[in-house]
Figure 1 (tube, helix red, strand yellow):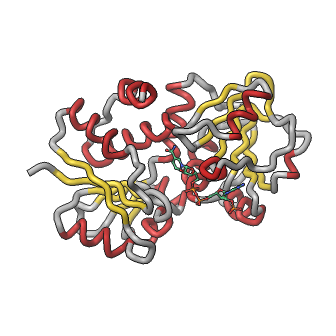
Figure 2 (cartoon, rainbow, N blue to C red; figure 1 turned 120 degrees about the horizontal axis):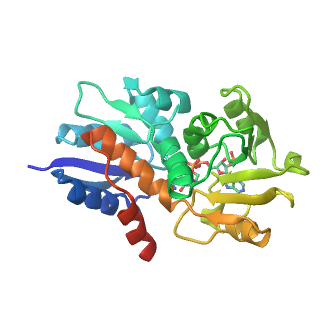
Length: 266
Ligand code: NAP
């Protein structure tokens, strides 16, 4: 019987992960099947245990359960411990093990797929939720000149930045007069067709605006283009974090280029 994996979230019907992992399995010859589990809030731990009891070997965790998944794990990777959030559960051990592949997924998309160099760059991270927590450590490891975390609720940005020496935190207003080479939107504003209230003039010449939201042209990306910046959605991050999860589970890293191209072609 094929090994079983799934993505768990709420809602989860829209997820592209089952399709992505099916492509990875075919390309690598790994014998696995990958489904989706919509867990009601309050029933996450129960749903994980049920899947595990049925022989499930691993789960990808998406909104809104990444922090709960971290709490559930007896042991985590260093990057999940730093993020305090888990997007990859390994269940074929005595106790659940958690990892977080969002940060490496973002950095691979930026550096390998898009040829960006983050060392020495001025970086702005918008948001302080699960996605921002997952990627901040990976961004800091690239040795940028600065990383500013800005959030609608500044106290959350301050709490997150306090975990990473050398990073700064503020509300959106306090960004006035600053310029960045890379602007990563890790807020969910784009999902609601909204734009964080950002001051004008944030985009340095040659800058890249990256919105983790994918599958739609967000207000943030429209603003970036109007300011002369390059714009990128989060589809590449989605595929790269999936590839890293596949590596964690199966010990083999799938090629991502063809899968990403097929998703872009629709
Ligand atoms: P989350 O934990 O719910 O956090 C949401 C964040 O967005 C918070 O910082 C929140 O600010 C901010 N926010 C929400 N609405 C806003 C608005 N109208 N204006 C300004 N800020 C607003 O969500 P998450 O897990 O961090 O996910 C964030 C986004 O990243 C989602 O759209 C998710 O789909 C996407 N994502 C993509 C990938 C990928 O692979 N491409 C991976 C992970 C996540 P407050 O703190 O003030 O509430």
